[in-house]
Length: 223
Image (tube, rainbow, N blue to C red; front, side):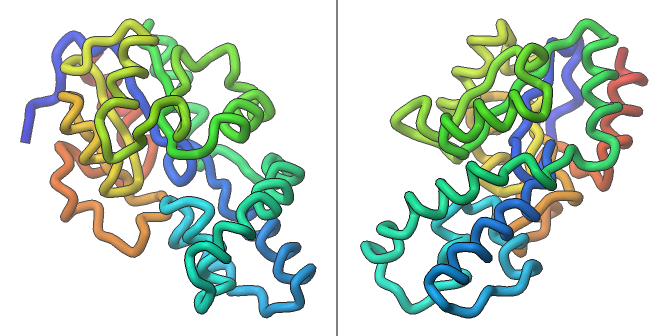
């Protein structure tokens, strides 16, 4: 594993499952859609686990037998329902506010690299109150490719003025680790997110953390 970067410039984060616990609102939107279509609502725990894989995986929890084309036809309505409720119960994970404040207090930059569509990402970031704080926000449709491709991470570094080698990339999915590593960043996998049923300790990250406070302490020691 690589040593923790010297002269750290900033930290990039995945959004859902890393910074924000958005699963309650994602499940609420699916519940409404299921009720509209008169199908059983899948358990919250089932939906929460697959949030990092995106809207199609969430829909698949409720419609496991649909072929891909029919599933995709349901996506616009799901996103519409989600957009209507996406900040009602979504909150930063415990310790994230303190972590972001610690990053800023040390004069470092932070940003977001997510596979979430841009129209949802931008609105959600504004509703949470981070619009003027994030140095860069790169969404799933900002580029023709998304994570695990490293290009979104590299674009976020460029927009935030960060050297990837002096940057952390933090996420709750193997795709985050792959994207960050291929971009040349120091990768941090977190256990507090959705994890997609995986074990962060098996993803090859440079650092695995149990709580945002662990990274806050690490940054203060490195300062």
